[in-house]
Structure formats: C-alpha cells, structure tokens
Image (cartoon, rainbow, N blue to C red):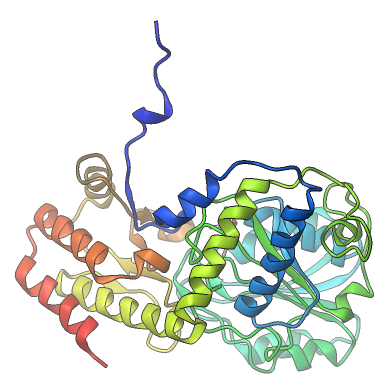
Length: 385
Ligand SMILES: Cc1ncc(COP(=O)(O)O)c(C=O)c1O
C-alpha cells in the first residue's frame, strides 16, 4: 500500500499572507538542481556570487554578507549570540511581535534590555529611541525595520549617530523589508542586520541573509557553537581552502542565488517602486470593501498590508474559506490584533496585479462586497503613475 499523505497531496496555494510568499518556477528549478558537495570549488564560485548579489540587495559593502543556515529567527539568535554580551545595555524598539521577540531573546541571553515601545500599528518615535541611547553605557540599539505583525516601516534616520556616539552597535531586522521596501543599510549606518528568504525574495524559508560591518566584527563573541560567526567567515570568506563548520544547505543556496538574480534583473529601485504601487493599489481595493489599513500614511511597510477587518465579518471563517476553497492564504492578526486584522503579503511575485485581483475577487464574493468597484480600484491603483 502506498503511504498517504505524500507531498503530492499538499495543494498549491496562492501565498498572500505574511510569508512564505509565492516561489516562482525559476527558483523551484534552481532548488531541484543536482546537489554537489559543500566544499566543491564550483559551489564555492556560486557562494562568492551569492555574497556579491546579497551585498547589492542589502546595499552594503560589508565583506561579511552571506546567508546563515537558519530561518530569520536564527538570524536574530546569531545577532544576540555574537554581538551582545551578558550585562550589555541594549535599547530595543518594540512596536509589534518581532521587536518583542528580540527583547525576549536578549533578556534570555542576560542583556540589560531597555524597551522603547509604541502602540501596535505605529512607528517608534525616533526621538524616544535617541533619548534612550543617550546613556553612555548603551552597547547596542535594535529595531525591526519592517514590522510584519502590523505592516509598519520604522524610519532609521538619526539612529546610527545616537548609538555610535558611545561606540554602540546599530542592529536591524530587515526580514520583511529586504528587496521590497526602500532600505540602504550602509547609508543608515547599520552595523549588522538579518533577513529571511521567504518574504520579498520569493525563496522558500530556510536561510537568513546576514551582514556584519567592521565595527561589529571587532566585537564578535564566540559563545554559541552553531552561530559562531568567525567559523562561518572561515568557510564563506576564506583566503585559502574553505574550512568546514557545518554542511551548507546547498540547494537552498542555489535557490537564493536565483532569487537574487531576479532582483538584480528587475533592479532594486524598480522593485521598490513596484512594491509601493502594489501596496497602494491593494489598499485602495480593500478600502472599497471596508477594510482599512492600520498604518497611517507615511508609516506603511510596502511589503505588508495590515488591515482592520470590518466587525460584520467573521474574519477567521472567511480566511479559512479563502484557504480551503479558493486556495489563497492571507494571515490573521498576532497579539492584540488577533481576531481584528488581516495581514496581506505584497512580496515579490505577490506584488503583482493578477494575484491581487484573484484575492480581491475571492474576498468580495465571500463578504458580499462590490466586486466591480473593488477590482476597478485595484486596476486604477496599478495604472496610477
Ligand atoms: C520581522 C520578522 N522578523 C523575524 C521573523 C522570523 O523569521 P522566521 O519565521 O523565518 O524564523 C519574521 C518572520 O515572519 C519576521 O517577519
């Protein structure tokens, strides 16, 4: 008797939730390319190109820029384990679930965590963050650039100067913003950042793009065996033979390479513009249906639209029917937004008119909305300059 279920029993979905995002055929093909050894020189040449493409996408000249063998949370853990020592005073911006997770991780690692908070759905006050960094014992400042729990983008201007004044590090989570929302890590003075592959890069989950600049490299801790950044530098950036630390996830690195090539072909600026347009078009269509965005104008994260679900709609039931019957995934709210919000990904291949129209048509049918008006609002949004 054949085993049931098999992978073939998992249906294809249109992934318009908070991640993972739609994976294009090109990337799936790269993933299926024959596996080679992790010390094969041919693979080494590809690794060098992944690092170069990642530098261009993250807008950094940091030599140490590579994908950690972990999901985005592993990137966060690596940042904690390698750049923060027990007792360090670390200012952490918390305006949603992911800033909260970092505060938790730092606390468990023995850091002296100083939280600066904002209401969910709003950006953090830059002045409040700067003020919290005024204490000369501050060793680091951490913020989430794209808060996936609320769809808010955090302004970074002025933060690097505040924390660098006492030789502290500026640390950033760019999991949901990378390649979808404008971000120039070097211009923002960021010392280290981590991301994930399953958002705007349209690569399956499993790698955490990571970058570390010279100031941070001077403070490397080697407390974690797995997240030993020096060991990874000796593998990724060795002058001579690459030194084995752990077996790199070869096929995921193939997939990331293809994803980064797609970003390069489109051009980062054009990609950011497309995400901005896709976000506004989708927002307009949802607004016709009575779903309003949480983030105020100017604070929106282009790659994620978080909307308040009208009280007349049973959000969990509609969301469940969208998945099961229409094959479309959107995400519900987290924390205080649970039961009140939908989070819709506007990520890479998901930031296009055709998948958005499929979603809008399905939602209008399930909520008795004005399908014609909503689809027209979407099209008008895409047509706008
Ligand atoms: C902003 C942010 N940070 C960190 C993470 C954690 O990444 P992962 O789920 O890949 O471990 C996520 C995942 O959604 C995220 O959105």
